[in-house]
Amino acid sequence: MTTTTDDVQSTPVPARGLSAALDLAAASHGRAVVLLLAFCLLAFLPGFFQIPPVDRDEARFAQATKQMVESGDYVDIRFQDEVRYKKPVGIYWMQAVAVKAGEALGVPKALTTIWLYRIPSLIGATGAVLLTYWAALAFVARRTALLAALMMASSILLGVEARLAKTDAMLLLTSVAAMGAMARIYMSCRRTPERAIPWQTPAIMWTALAAGVLIKGPLILMFVGLTAVALSIADRSVRWLKQLRLLLGLLWLVVLVSPWFIAIVAKSGDDFFMKAVGDDMLAKITSGQEAHGAPPGLYLLLFWVTFWPGSILAGLAAPTIWKARREPGARFLLAWVIPSWIVFEIVMTKLPHYVLPLYPAIAILIAGIVEGGGLYNKRWLTRGTVGWFLFPAVIAIAVPVGFFMMSRDLGLVAWPFAAAALIFGLFAWWLYDVDGPERALLRGMASAVFIAITVYAVAFPMLPALFPSALVAENIRASGCASPHLASTFAYQEPSLVFLAGTDTKFTDGAGAAEFLNGGACRFALVDKGSERSFTQRADSVGLRYTLSQRIEGFNISNGKAFAMAVFRTAAP
Image 1 (tube, one colour):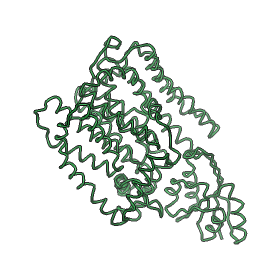
Image 2 (cartoon, one colour; image 1 turned 45 degrees about the vertical axis):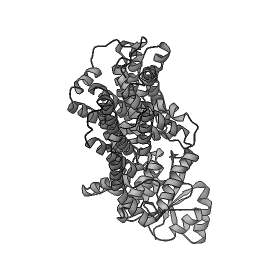
Image 3 (cartoon, helix red, strand yellow; image 1 turned 120 degrees about the horizontal axis):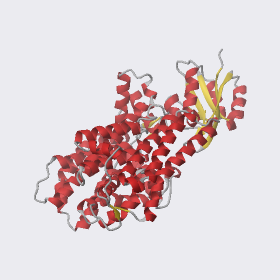
Image 4 (cartoon, helix red, strand yellow; image 1 turned 180 degrees about the horizontal axis):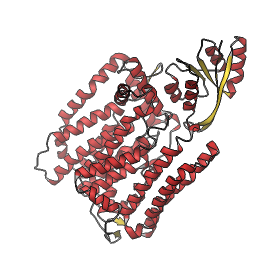
């Protein structure tokens, strides 16, 4: 990772501004941690509390956790009356702890307060950034490790996952912990093979693996397993694997994960494994689930956006990384990335967050090349640095266009933050040759923070039409009913509606919605335009007295379609 060539950029630039701040933080581990925590809060908190539940995965996870808290059954996983056995119980337990803590602290309507369910993801994303710093210290100096961790904190994909109440931020945390521990074992065996490995290091790895299995099943085992196999093949030796304490580690993993698996098998028989392994994992390998199928190469294309701003330097760093591939550090990091990346590209179902646990290794590789002055300065490669300007430029255009399309407003409140993102991106690109790659990257990170404020803290909360379920729930709450009940026609069956309106929310056709209203007081029916005729016909035939509460129009971001439905309620006697 310290390899240099005649074509690399190695002229030192005196530290000032953001680079000087990096120097100050790198003076000690304590300062580095403080800087990382502060940056994570700046990057992850905008919009964290304001954005309503997002369909579909976040709302499904949150609703399943909500039912755990409502029922007091912390073994079984359900969404309404259906079992939800796609993932193990880990994230549901974490979310339940956050919700129960919120209730204990007096948070109003804690059960339907979505940011409480997001707390584990916020902790997972922040912890993953800190652990990226820790993992990087096995390969590089403190300052370089700090740059790698900041790269992770500013990445677009991690910013998204930090704000969603699902598994991926926590899986990232456990993956970095396991890989960081294994990296220390491997690097110690390569540098000082006679030195004994303290038992705490493999204990961290196996404990992190157990936590990852409880969060998202065996996926984390693939990361570690493929890395170990690739290293053993490249080194033509498996001696270092003895230091992983395989037998004791596997036993410890089984001890940690088996209680819940035994409990769920006792409750569901083999149903959990049939659905988790057969219906979920194996189905994703052979077919594109939920219209998420894509050909190989998609992750490579998405990388330039999902890992922005760090991705802009990936092409400049790649030649030197490849030249350094035989160095132990580079070899480990490449073994962390390449085998699992190939698997994900081959698998039919593709979602951007699947490759997130591989990004810390890429961040460490890029940071090592940047700090070592090993970036290539070929003109055709450095032209790619315009990406630091193009991405905020796209955001700056998309935000007012989105405001105008949704609310016939230009979203002037968002403009100053979008302009700040654009300016930092422009300087990152325009002054790259003058100030060097590190300072340009730091400016890109500042741009990422302002993009987060623009999109998550301003645009999304000010465009309620993007979240129709929240509008429906607000209308129901405004009615003053103490215990409202809702039925929706099949045209809108989003999990966020169940989460916000109640676990007993029904889904039916137009005639069924009329019969539902006829079943008692304080009932509401959400009816699409195509079902209104059958609704009114059935209502007239049963003598139902009802009123139109509100017509709601918006946009369903989960399927990319316009939303237009009417809320009816039973009329007062």
